[in-house]
Image (cartoon, rainbow, N blue to C red; front, top):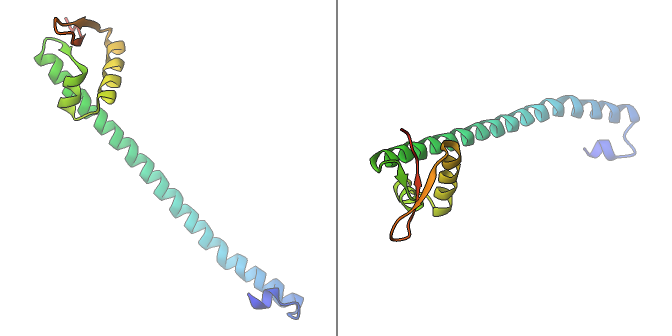
Length: 119
């Protein structure tokens, strides 16, 4: 590199050094970029697989609970059964309520039930 920046180095030597750097450096740069892209893509695919697996797990628990309780479920029950935060359980149930046109019922104690009719 010193020869490349040295004004006393002949122009032809500097051009040859630039060509060597370009020819040797470019393939390594491409290879590094390809490796980085592969890691990014693999990580992204792994994340999507994880999200799908978690959604399938929650959905399975959801179906088990509503089957065992005549189509009724509370946010708290899903949160406890699936190990979710109340916020995530509510979001999931709200999506399912729209998907299956669920009704809502309020118990004598003030609990709100999502009521799914599969009859």
